[in-house]
Image (cartoon, rainbow, N blue to C red; front, side, top):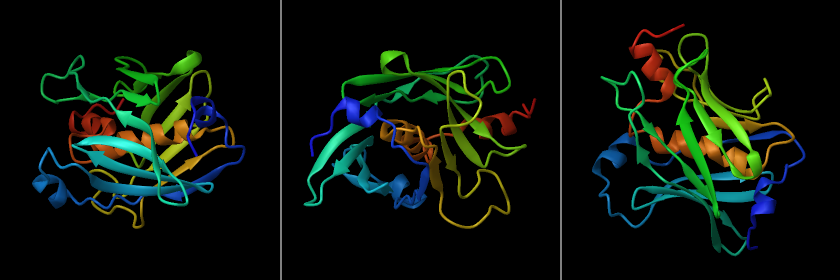
Length: 212
């Protein structure tokens, strides 16, 4: 199956969820040479679609996997280090993506209820906000379509960053009935790429005592 952009952005038609089990430990990350051709991160089952996520020389790539094991790359990270405003102390890296030939651009929102949220822009005028959610410590990351209040995709974080008694179990990603495969991959790839490279947005808020 050769994927096309229309299929990747087509709504799946039903809500669902799946575990996101990262096979790379922090120790593996620390000792992984940058030029490693491939390092496995996780496999997803999205309503019967098999997706493999792996690092290719530390660039995160998502690939659809056929029944015979053939892989078709559908998305990759375009890692751009960019310090936002007020980041005198904390390094903050924005992480644009590429979904087939479509660029996914991100910018930090420097105002509003969460100054560490990302404004995300995609093809054909699609737009989202990616933000941490939780009372004080984030236990999930939410991707919400522009103009909507209910998240389209929710990535439950496990362990919860900076939580001394984090709930057990693997991380999960869940989606609503209008979510597309591409929308599901966006937050999963961002969390996997940031897991050991720098702090997630809400963690930075906590460490800066920026709770409001």
